Image (tube, rainbow, N blue to C red):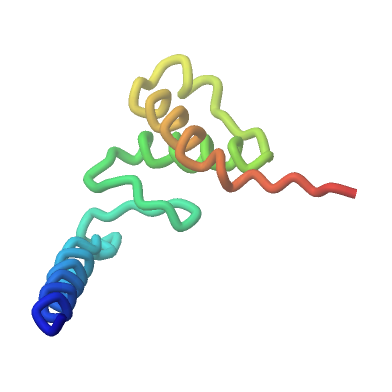
Length: 97
């Protein structure tokens, strides 16, 4: 019985170590970390990619926002817009009355 308790304790502590060691650290904007609406998107993006993410995220949250000129002519903005829209979909809040 004591052997099982030690095995269980060892398993628990090992699991705890793995879970805490794999927690992602938040990168600051100065380190290249890019966040929008509390969601981490990555690092080292072009300004138009970031603008696309912001506009796509706003659209996903229910406020349509898109620069059609950039969307049609700038691949970074285009890709960022879709990424932002898809990653922020869960932020849409629908009020029920």
